[in-house]
Each structure stands twice: as structure tokens, then as C-alpha cells.
Image (cartoon, rainbow, N blue to C red):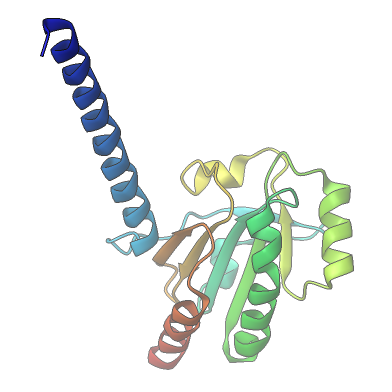
Amino acid sequence: MTNQSRAVDSAHLNSRRLFLASLAAAGSMATTALTGCGVRELAPQSRYLLLDGSTISTSDIKGKVALINFWATTCATCVKEMPELVDIYKKFHLRGFETIAVAMSYDPPNWVLNFVKTRQLPFKVALDSSGQVAKEWGDIKLTPTTFLIDRDGRIIKKYVGAPDFIALQQLIETLLTDS
């Protein structure tokens, strides 16, 4: 083997190691995001501007189990998961469960309104036109990002991407039963 081919093989091996290390790091970050927040920190005290012009705050939902979902009409995963979120809301709402779907700042309000009307979303939908709410919740950039909050206003779980809906429903059931 020539010195040149050894150098090429070494460079290829180093490149492969860097690639594998970056994959491992990305996988670790995704796992962290999906497994929850670890410490049950209090949810940010945000104020949400709802589509009807009214407002609601995080403190207004204290005493309820809540799902805060950051989404966009242009996000394929968000659109795909909405029927599941509707089903979960309908299943648990009368037992003290609330959902607030927060449309991202780049989502045109008329698109959000049209989406909500055509899909007949039964839960609260907020416009985050300034991006302030997304910043308060950890500078959310990726959609969907969803938080499950317990009755005490603590973050129980954070999902980046679509959650496992069966596991999510089981967790909501546990939170509603234990509380």
C-alpha cells in the first residue's frame, strides 16, 4: 500500500468516525427530547392569543392536565397528527384535560383560521404572531413540539415530532386518575 492510499484510507476512516459520532450525538439529542424533561419544571407562564381574540394564560389551565402543541399549517407531520389530537381531546376533555395548539409565528393567520374551520378543531388554538410564546417555551423552532403538563403546572413530557399516541393516552389517563 502506498503512502498516498494510506492517507486516503486514513482520511476516509476519520470522516466515517466523525459521521458516526455525529449520528450518535443526534440520536442522543432526539432521545433526550423524546424521553421528557427529566426534572418536572414548571411550565412557562405564557399568555396565548386565541383565534377568537380572547386570551388564556398558563395559570388559567392550572388544575387541568394540558397539552401544549406548537404546530404549523405547512408542517406535514403537524397536519397528519391533528386528527389524533382531536380524538385525545374529545376522549379526555370532560375529565379535566385541555389542549392549546399554538400556531407558529410564520404561519399566516388566515391559513390557521381556515385550517381550524375546515378541520373543526374543538380545542383552543392560539396565534403566536410575535414568536414570544415559542421563545418562552425554550425557543421552539421545530414543529410539532408538544408538552404534556400536569395539574400542578409542571412539564411531564416533551415530544419533538409526533408522539406515540397510545403511550401519550396512557400517560394522560394516569395523570387524570392520579390527580
